[in-house]
Length: 225
Image 1 (tube, rainbow, N blue to C red):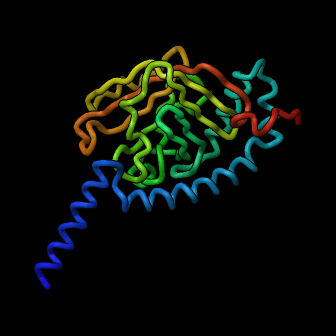
Image 2 (image 1 turned 30 degrees about the vertical axis):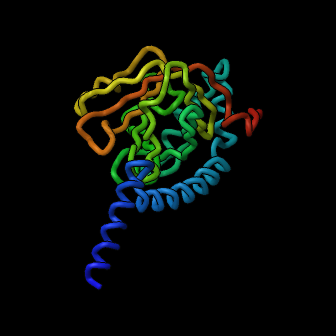
Image 3 (image 1 turned 60 degrees about the vertical axis):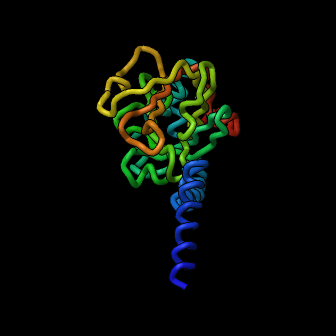
């Protein structure tokens, strides 16, 4: 019986390792899926309350869509808390559609990709950055290395939909903070550990802003307060 138990246990371990290598770690993925479900509900609640009539009134002073999105992004940044759902990251070329959170602490990234708190929100200008796992907790950024020049990354925020085009990917040292430096143009940086199953490096995808529209994918139209 002991031999059978050991063989069975060994088979389970091998199956788990095989699953992780071929796809992603199963137990943390279950936890990640539960967290994503919670985040979707949280995001829906957030979208019902933001932007408010007063937020729209202030933003309406801006000339053009980008100026109005910028004003709303500034206001949104003052209202969110760490670990809270803030929007969606959608990358069609790698089949990614996931809710992102504010913050990059361990607990934050167990829920989904996290927005670096020290960087602007999408639409505020400069460099916006997100981090995500590659092998655990749904592994949202597993295929960053597959991104090609021109691939689109959509950030659906409660105040607007921002579309970026990938310019390049790069592998850097974990201590390289230069990837987050502020730029004159608005850009997006996505980071994850590299290679798979190691944290010895970081893989980084850089993308430049191409299009901006008010509210996520046109699901809500601009309305005059």
